[in-house]
Image (cartoon, rainbow, N blue to C red; front, side):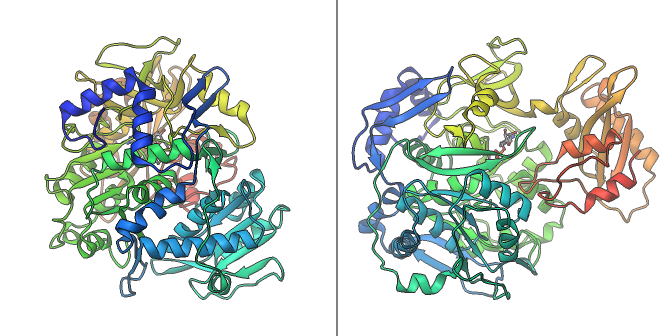
Length: 635
Ligand code: WT7
């Protein structure tokens, strides 16, 4: 019916139309022609929005690792599957071929199996960005176990609650991790976390930093000697299409983290298809996604998406500022990276530094550059396009969520003309809707509303681990027969989507709906301002008023803060409306952020409401140390 990789705008529109008119035929063809099955499905899709039950390729049998590895062995055995760039640039790289990967995953699968891990068991993976992380994830999939990767920057409390929630039988970790010039001990965090967990029988430890650690007899084992003894063959355990593949925790706007459950067949098909199209991967390309495997971006676009396509995927252990702010550009030059995928927060951090870090770096191999995770402001988009893409690479502003499993809205390079700050159009198979507050779909263009998806797609999360009711209520109760994303979006005159931010961040001032994102964009246009966050606080007359936290670009300069405040409000009045002017403006050195780079407005809201003493658990923040300074200087 259609080719796999979309090559033109005309083809996109044609494929998109087919995909929504006959979704079953569309997905049936893709699944059949581009993946390897032990048994074909009985039905492409069964769904029931009311009870939030979705099944894709029901009746099929498969193992995702046969699709990621085994089927490439004949034609790509010597091709690099994983290209490992260590934290320290003077250390050697590792080129792990598809055939190496096969043997390493089989050995690890044997180790897991010998330790009693069976189909359906949960394994918590708490590892730095090293090859063992990818190998462990795939080995879990090979034995039919469910991996639950927890970002190795999370605290013992956060780790413990995640292990308990999904009653993991095993934890795979390392002695420590290298991050820039620092060594961060990991095993002691696991020890602390396990004090409260009864389900964990064994801890496997990768030696990475040679940090001294305590090993508990009969529970903790060094991994290397076990791998050495293990056989390099492990027949993949055949699983059902809807058997669980992984759990990945994401924070909700309230309550405990949600363990989003993804299943085997649908996730595989969508991760493979979306990777191929959004990045226009070609056989000889080297792809680099700078996210951490601890997030969905890393699951889908470091591991599964690339390997399903027989790609070379770069895995970088370190941080963007080590040994200096030119590291990303050094890596791209050194490995001749063709597609680079990062986050707006990283772009803004790099754009703040001197252009000297970019100059003289050979970025000429780049063909596509992408972003994900939050709205990208216009300034950052242009900086990225001009200085990294050299106006020669399509910028793919990709929208998705932990819950969606893969990218749902994105330009397709060379097919979709881009516009700064617009994620543009839905990928084939994705049916979007904008909804108003009372549950009606807003049709037509140049409109704004709540972003929903009105037809299932293969990689949607199937439930929240252990709490299907919460899954149904969070995603399927706001609007009838639709998935509600929690985001707001605008559809412009040509039907392009711009994600305007979480609708839970909307602030009503004097009866006017104000989103924080456009106000922050206006503030950030000021030449002296690096970043800002706006929250609401109670106001006698307006209901809510706005409180802005603002980071200056250069603190050493002698700014007149009152002049700056006036200028900021003038900008807001000009760009949005005088209604959106800030009542209070606090200059600060940092903003509290999650590990994935999102500003924690909940915390800023509390501080603005003079409830700085009731912040709750802030241990999972990227930078908890900024909080006290913000409280001390609050207005
Ligand atoms: C939320 C999901 C998806 C991988 C990383 C984050 C925001 C994501 C974009 C984008 C504007 C974006 C949304 C979404 N978001 N991509 N291109 N433009 N906003 O995954 O932690 O599950 O967060 O990230 O608000 O709902 P996540």
